[in-house]
Length: 201
Image (cartoon, rainbow, N blue to C red; front, side):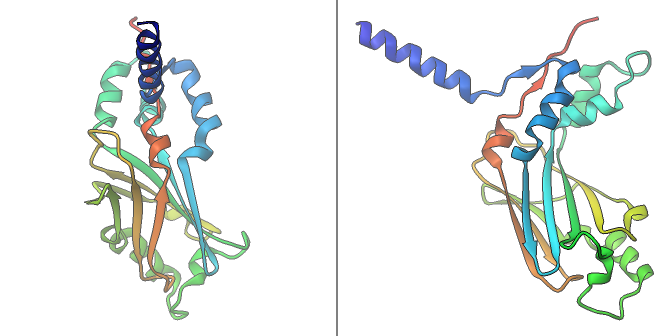
């Protein structure tokens, strides 16, 4: 009987460890900064470095939330929970070259590159989650970074409704001449991201 009781306690503790916890809003940014590396994947290809980082909806909600005006934190968070967010960065591996100069087609000029990444790149990005291929529902390219050594894209995909074993960001690259770029994301760490402790006013 005692052994059975200990087994139940052990299984209960194991299940609790598998569930994401909660973090107070005042501490969430610190938690995110400490754990950002575990939510990030990187791949070096040719002269470029591709980095994908998971962004919790909680972080985006906290950035937008204004305590003295607008909707409450729970409402802001609920709106962001309608998607799963990532920041995709493409940078020059040498940290010196403007990344848009690394095109496989030397005749591409700055305006062509900006047009490509502003309007043509989104359909080439997909999230593969446990075998399901998802198109992005939000895409933002910061054009002001186009002359720098790194360009960034904020991406959103349909929200996860369960824990997923695998997440792969797949990019059909046509600008740098690399072909398919597959970035395996730390799915199990993403599953364990805590949510916010909503404090009632």
